[in-house]
Length: 296
Image: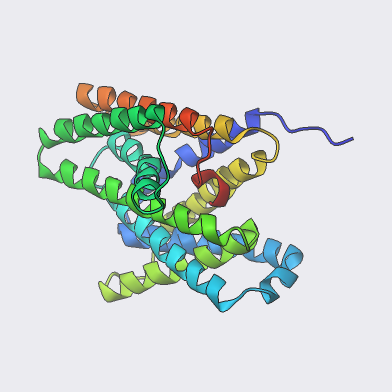
């Protein structure tokens, strides 16, 4: 008789994903390089599992599947490029809260393009979240344009990951999660290294400490973090996992306070609480149907 895993595994995934912004802050490398190596190492970690379990599925991939995976990989690459860059300009609290607004962009696309109706509670949640993001931006604007630019990049990161999730929802109807992730992560790595070459950002050499941080992002945050979320969706409700992930900005902010002595402003705290509350209302109103948790 198989024993159902404890719900505590979701919180283990939460802790690992919360480390992402900390590892980025500890790195001295250009943001595009951090993004590129994270995706490179993350894709390499999936090669062996796919080769062992999914060879037959790889043979059945169509050109259409690959094209959609390519678009998804581009969106994911732009997500990491913008969000990781934001961390060098604004606080961990502002960046992690604002990048969590991807469900708002998904909802907007679903309403405007797919013509899906939004419940009143969903609209209230979105309004509260957007109001919180305005408070964060206003608070950061008091400290100069540098932090405000970082906030904008974090919002761009939320937009791009929203596109990645929407495309992934289409492709994942045909492809298993391991095959999909391997292909998309690999494409994302190629795109990011291409951007680095185009901008004449040195690809190598980097110190061992930097390479270890890149690998830590891939292993702990991508593999043990998001993979645990996906695994636990087989045993707990998507609403439970969706709501649990809202704790990521909270844990990341606490860690930044301890490690980097980053003290969020009052407006950032109030705005962050508003964003998370709004997202909580939105997630509950949709029954946890958040594409983000199904394909990363």
